[in-house]
Length: 94
Image 1 (cartoon, rainbow, N blue to C red):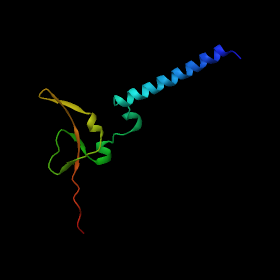
Image 2: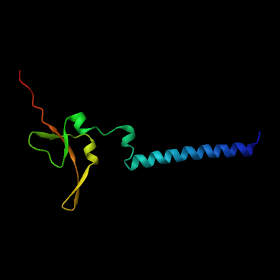
Image 3: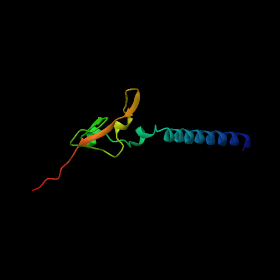
Image 4: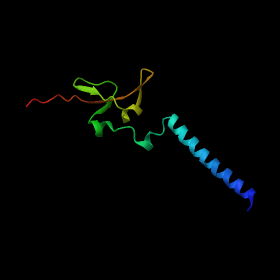
């Protein structure tokens, strides 16, 4: 067997695995892993809400991460993040 060839193949495999791990770590720490794991819920679909800067009367803020958290808007030169506001559900009395 040719030891020189085996060492070269081993180095290539380790290098590829190292690069893959590096890419995954960069994606996790920069926040770009969300689309792959589906951690953000759809505000309109999941919670029947809408993305706003502030909630109106009769609405509550969804405390879990939603797609609204990625929406930014500039107001008076200040960047603000939108929040998911859903209708307040009052208990029904029967």
